[in-house]
Amino acid sequence: MTKAKAKAKETVVEVALEPITVKTLEVTVEGKTPLIMDRFPESVQEEILAKQAGISKSSKKKVRDTKKEITDAIHVTQKGKVGFPAAGFKRGMMEVTSFVGDKFFSKKLVSGAVKIMNVEDGLIQIDYKKQDVLKHTIGHNMKFSPQFHGWKAKLEFQYDANNISPHDIVTCLNYAGFYIGVGAWRPKCAKGGSGEYGQFKVATQKIK
Image (tube, rainbow, N blue to C red; front, side, top):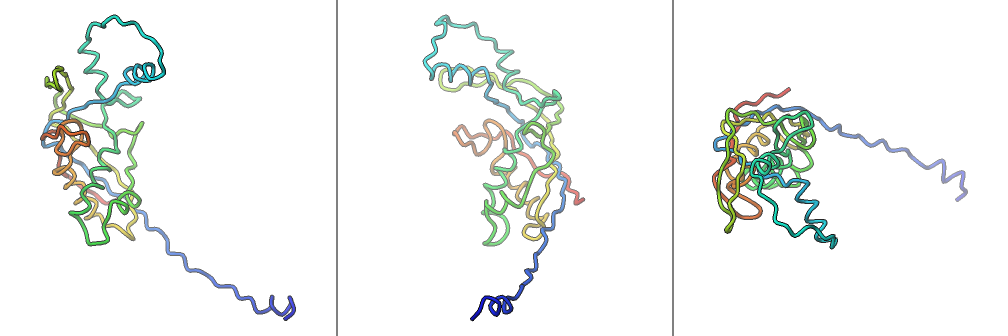
């Protein structure tokens, strides 16, 4: 068969591309228990890196500045607003997928099909009625942690409506607020120390 004949037999097949249907969902969550923050300050990270690099530091014991400890533990956006990592809410939603949807529902689906959009410096703004300090012990050390009462947050989601529904997203978020929580001493902490802090519930929802 000549090249000319082979070329004449070639056919062009058009592939129908199904569009991704992206929709937006706005959800407000309200704290059921106080939110405790325990941000890892850059100054502490630098000290640890210095020790690991073998850089000697003064062996003099520093006077403890509890006010600075409390301030450093709070997540703050570049605009000076109190916030909390959006990843904390998303991670909670992924962890509770076994309670939501059908057998095809998974962490992978929530991870890819759901995006939190109103993020500033990795944080979601937190509004609250009152802030004070929780004194507690870890081992033999006294710790002073900022806690926020009557807190709430607005989460704006973009999602692939072909594969996940608003009902599934809201249910995931509501279950995450009960089973997982956010912040320190939440019901399910990765490093242990589980408690009843940082629980929340879905208060309002609006499809845009």
